[in-house]
Length: 294
Image 1 (tube, rainbow, N blue to C red):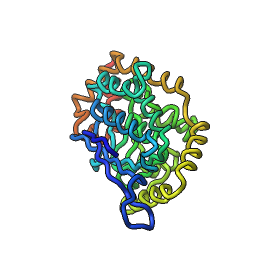
Image 2: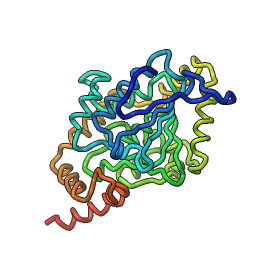
Image 3: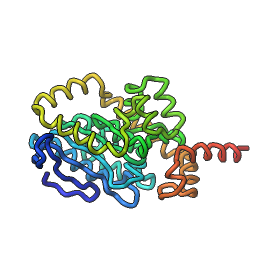
Image 4: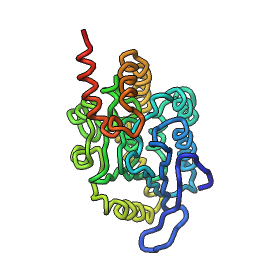
């Protein structure tokens, strides 16, 4: 890898059975965007650059994504910088594809195997980033997933509707999206949100083993198999664009703005109880809104 990033730390991994680093086999990409790994313009800018670099034939065979923050993989987008991060996402595909959904779709189509290793919270677009990866493995003790968008006032707009429906089926996807609840790793595994929930003490070794095993196989076979599965399972560009357009419309709605303002008053986008337990906070927000209604 030749690029440097503001919010992503990269390093080479090792090939199974060798005990030594093998350049180009496995890449670790660790998100590190203090204070809490919000998806803002800086993170999106780095993702655009990393995805471009991973598109090249000399890229690693496998990439493992994780987080430097024990509490937050990606909590969600930075709600104060929606236009800014959208403008950065547009640089990956042009103004007509100015959305995280289309950027994440490009991630899904990379000629590289992408593995997400989850500790902490991945909600909203953070969950949608994981869903765009090829595989997801999560700490049984410390992983939390959620799609809080409906609780705030808009449907998910970066892939959750498409991916969760395909992975879970209609009923469970509706439960995940409409309740805006937090899911622990065991329930997420049972529903199909992640591949497996792994005891935290075993997670690093397990993911490294999967990655290094895959990296030892012929690259052309990996790319061909992934492309064939993508052809069956990925949403079309039109479906992704439609979800993004609806999100971008409703996130500006006055009711959404009101609910977001109330969350900020309660510590939203800080390391507060509201952000740590956002699923519960959204339920309480519903109650307070109902009490204020005439």
